[in-house]
Length: 83
Image 1 (cartoon, rainbow, N blue to C red):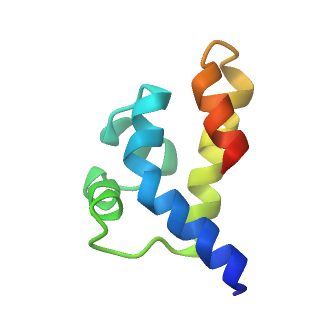
Image 2 (image 1 turned 180 degrees about the vertical axis):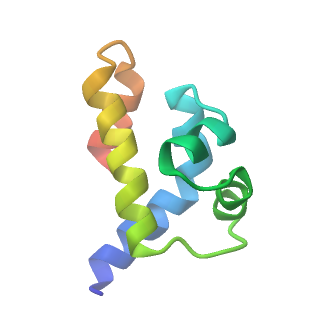
């Protein structure tokens, strides 16, 4: 895995809680969208476990889908444009 990808994954993990809140989701909602447990989201947000590349791709996809479907959340659109 390239250094750039590792940095992108770490940035996502460092900001996961804030991204989730900007999207208006609870940890349980995000977990449901990903098909994982709320505890897994909590562990990722609290840096208890490292975000894997597969998890990164899944989480990014869920947020990008939300951006595409929700034209009203301009803040999330801007944040995802930066990540």
